[in-house]
Image 1 (cartoon, rainbow, N blue to C red):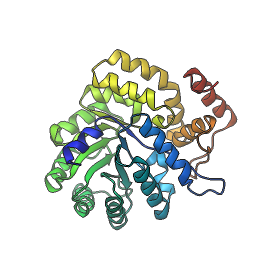
Image 2 (cartoon, helix red, strand yellow):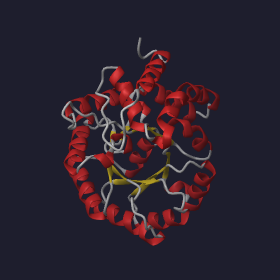
Image 3 (cartoon, rainbow, N blue to C red):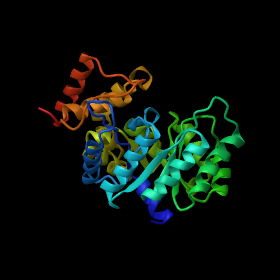
Amino acid sequence: MTFGAQRRRLSGVVAIPVTPFDADGGVDARTYGLLVERLVDGGIEAITPNGNTGEFYALDERETRLCLDTTVKVVAGRASVVAGVGHDVASATRAARHARDAGADMIMIHQPVHPYVSDAGWVEYHRAIADAVPELGVVLYVRNAAITGAQLATLGEAAPNVIGVKYAVPDPVRFASVARDAGFTRFTWIAGLAELSAPGYFAVGATGFTSGLVNVDPATSSEMFRALANGDYPAAMAVWQQLRPFEEMRAAHGNANNVSVVKEALAQLGLCRPDVRPPSRALADEERSRVGELLSAWGLAG
């Protein structure tokens, strides 16, 4: 797949699948495959195994490889696989090369988790990983408001395969400025804070958005994307209002329940266990009841 085709796939709903666990606490590969199949059947064309909704930082290397390999096998070319990679440069490079060899189309480099990030060091971190897999498109995950358009422009010149930016700073004005300082047409811009932020980010230039909610209801996430792609903001905001209570539950307590709410919804739909790994936590009884009420309101559960 050409970089141009990859960029077109990023201009849509970019799904971040959850990682289901079995009764013994291990990755449930069979259920994982069924969840990915459900996304593809729902029309989703870009899937990111080992994203944050997939509890990337709670998985070991063997588990992240299992999730990626399962995704590639199930997708079978029907959607683009964007493999999440991260940690130190050597680990991220090793994961990127495994993704290439396994048949992924792209990688997404997680925000560097390091207390001391220099401007030049940020560029070099991503350039080193991108250079290891020149055949793959590379998506940057930007959560740090200090990252500038100038840094992105420098990286874009040094690494031609960096094709997309998942921007997850909760500031549409900052996003619009960074995107234009970076060279607006150089990258595909993805709203990285899911459905609630998508209308604001689309208004200033995003062409895709990431989603964890899509695990629960692919059709509604796709409905929002179609409205935004067509510039129909009233229709998009009608979907926004429907999804708002669910997404606000996920965002509560500093996003502590981000994954727990999605997994609880899937559990109530009979699709996977609700288990999450620390530092996430299972929902309290009243929170589980609220999830059930929302699923009923959406017509997904009786």
